[in-house]
Image (cartoon, rainbow, N blue to C red; front, side):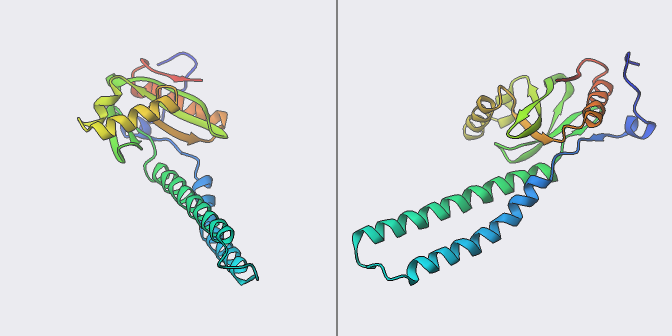
Length: 194
């Protein structure tokens, strides 16, 4: 037992602990995309229905810039929604073997054994609290693929050395549960750094 930490229930001790990730941003993004497609379609329709000189070079450039900006925004929103949905489908799962996490750069759900985990911490991720998992030899997660290793390094630079990042609820109770589970499954070697 660990001082100041309640023990997990017998069911949790025998199986695993699943960390609940923040889901609403993914659903908002997924709902926003069709709405924006309709609004942008209407905007382009209005743009073309006016009486500007369609053959002028200025109009052609403005129209091309508008279409490129709309497409770029829709691609970025779709990518962000897809990334958020992957995090919801593949939440962190703590067990006695290690922690199963979604490795965004490699698009794989990997099991990281506890001895390989260097730290589990919370911090700011965008506009909310995030769960950051640091590991020893993060490039080893790429399995020798230089492209995946490069993506992992890029993600680590973005999130201060963490190859695994999830958006979390900032509820103190939930953070306490995560801390409790990390301590339990690691035998007290690790704890949730705040």
